[in-house]
Structures are given as C-alpha cells and as structure tokens.
Image (cartoon, rainbow, N blue to C red):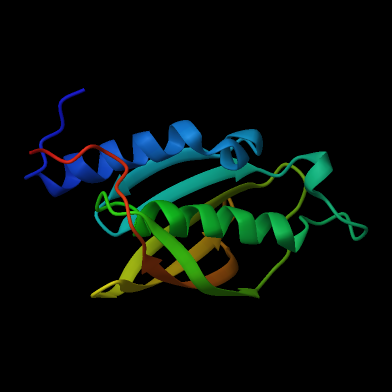
Length: 148
C-alpha cells in the first residue's frame, strides 16, 4: 500500500486502517470505524444483550470502551503512536438493548507529545448518552513505515 504522507487525511485513514487490523477489542464488540480525519474519529456499535447490566441498560464500561476507542483513533491519526494517560466519562442518559450508539471524538489541543480530546456518545436519535474527555501522550513508534 502506498500512502501519501503529505496528505493529512490520507495519512489519518492509513494510520486508522493499520491500527484497526490489530484492534481485537473494538472488532469483538462489533464496533464500526465510520470516519477518521486528522484529530477526529467516529465509531459506532449496537447494544447487545451481553452489554446490558442489572438495570437492563448498557453497562457503563461498554460506553466507556466505545468512547475510548473513538479517542484512540482520533489521537493516533497522525501516524504517531499515542496512548491514553488519563480519561474520564460523564454518563448523561441510559442506553438500552438495541440502541445504536455513536462516539465522535474531536481534538481540543495537541501540543508537543500531549493531546486532549472530547468524545460525545449519542444514540440513534442523536440524544446525548455520555461525554468523555481523554488526555493522550505520544510514545515511540509509528503505525506505518515512514518514508526514507
């Protein structure tokens, strides 16, 4: 695969493709990577029976995982490996069995090796379910071989 390293969108897409191939957790949960551009990503999944808790709502850990995956694809969209260094989530409303949830991550700040990303999780009606903020840290390595 030839990647145009001078095109930020092409680089973000290629980085996401490389990362997705190794992302067993997101794949296992049925997530779909819908969109990625530099500093932004959108992922979605449908709440299944095994994702519900004793209240018959989506377990908060699954909401966090969806938001965290969107955050990961957004902060890794520059062909630099980035990891979470701190995250938090605020649950706004419950999600239910069969709901289609979408997490949209957007970059707030990226300075040096540090980034801040906000992720909004909404249901199929566009109603907010959760708000997530992640702080990233760039570490050694790239997703794609860099041109020489």
